[in-house]
Image (cartoon, rainbow, N blue to C red; front, side):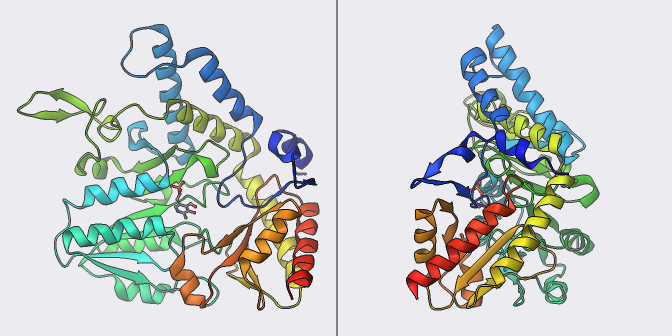
Length: 404
Ligand SMILES: Cc1ncc(COP(=O)(O)O)c(C=O)c1O
């Protein structure tokens, strides 16, 4: 049995009240909550060994450096990267994507093609549009169907020898669809192009194996995986990372500097200019330990049960439509009540202590596809319960009554 009661005790925030009601936190797609095991690591860092890394001979600096590099190794092991230097520490998914987009500016030429999917978060659309503006490359889009799935036959037609890069998320944040990335990677490699997978929404639910996937770049954010905000990772195959130029110039990323010429440090430091989020990186490692102690397989099985239970209950509400109905989806339910603006539903739910997200979820093209301004999104984590689903369902019914 999944030890849900024990797990909930790890999250201090889950026992707080909002507007006098017990918090029901269902905005995990935006950011996850933090267990005490990770909070303790943050407190320990600032209490005992706060220092800058990689550059001090003193004990504190050495301790911080060791812990930071240990975190990189934890991330490497978690994602099954071949080398620790293939893990670049960043401020999050957005920065990881921008780092790769910046690097490709020097590798693309006019007329080259970049393919993104219709299900992307804005952070996996805008950097590529900026790259196209800079290079004259052309952006193509894999379309989606009504269920919120990518149409792979159309993807096959888009691929050609002009394709240089394909970007797709592993799981859609707005709809929860799990995309067939293995197939997309295989097809893309057949035309000699590279693939970046945005794993921001996948990593809280499953454990990607970057070598088994044979993916070129994989990116994620710690704050969606029970870690802190402002830290994340970029996995890149060694050969690609060697080929890409540095993202930012500054301290830590150099081998030698003179006014005539600078040479760059080896991987991973070439991409890590300046003082990083040291505490965040160490806490990211602790979050990975925490998730692995529960087991991503156990997490995903439990969340699937929650999703099935919630979907059935929510669909019993008359006039409610769920967006994103793929069989292959994670614990996200995006919905609207007929004739009612999602913002109004979210505001009323908040008064009942229920935290959901409303709006376009940084995926305006998906909203345009469905011709809606936005949705209400309830995104469940492994620390949510069926009782909380019941509270949500009652809350939606009440909101419907008040707003109809
Ligand atoms: C699929 C996806 N990609 C990228 C991001 C951006 O992540 P961050 O804001 O942590 O950089 C998000 C955040 O919601 C997301 O859901």
